[in-house]
Length: 212
Length: 212
Image 1: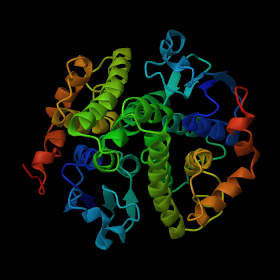
Image 2 (image 1 turned 135 degrees about the vertical axis):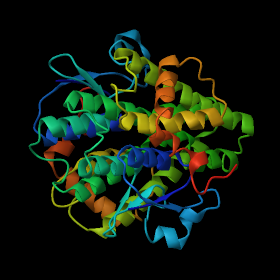
Image 3 (image 1 turned 90 degrees about the vertical axis):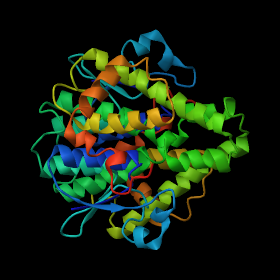
Image 4 (image 1 turned 180 degrees about the vertical axis):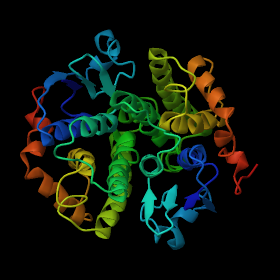
């Protein structure tokens, strides 16, 4: 498998974690988002969405969207399950993942921040307030949901899709100096994840295209 | 089952479509987002996220996040399947759904538009440009993906999770006067969906809490 991705892309980071948790090897193909490589024909000919991550299977079939990729990996490589066995548990894990992937991350990714700066002429302070606002709303909800069923990871005693989404979001929040002190359960889950090689090896600074 | 929802909420609309397609009856419990009812204790005591849709099962268990709810319905009521039988097909349907649910809708929902108006002091024109920008980006990608495998619905000859996400997005785009002429394949899928009772009966104007 080949993974088209970018060291700093949260959505790419989610897939790297899932691949590592499942012990699946892959070829890392960097697409430099900040330089606009995702908008070049070499890449858009592979994926009309022009987004990373993009997973290319050995037979050439391609899958987009990080959560669709992870669900595919889960179905085709069930070992080290990233979803619980029961339907209600799976619904809770997917909801926690989507709380990050549908409520927080889409508002804070690179293209949105660029729109705020360029089209809406917002300064750095306004951009940072925007960023921190959506992180705070999302993590407040995430923290409250963790209190429903406290465990080592977001759901239970092994990492799931929810943790694949949470950890990149925390990395990003730290990059934007968000105050995370109000989310002790969430941060304990983050720390538990970061004790695992699968998460350590997926982090931006460990990627071949990492920049300081 | 009880569905806490709001007639104009796209995410609620997705779940109403899925319930109708599967022929599942449910009690409709309105939560008036524009009046802030989702932030009142009566509702946040049920869901710390304070978001609709919220599905409450007959045993009292509650599920949040529209796509997690639909995946749960799919697992527990497999009739009228909303995901194809093959893993690659499922990945494509989920990716199409997430193209709407993770790339377009989160940028254009009510709380984001309110932030643009209040915190960022943007006028109506700037808000509409923002709205139309993300719709155009998302639908361009959606249209290109439909061209990969033209069919009556987004994927194949029966409606899927992708259609549950697409149709509410088109309703919203029409409300904001987006120009949809560049997306003929997407609009043909929309029209095919709207020929079905399941979609007709789920639309905002058919809801018990509908307003003009």
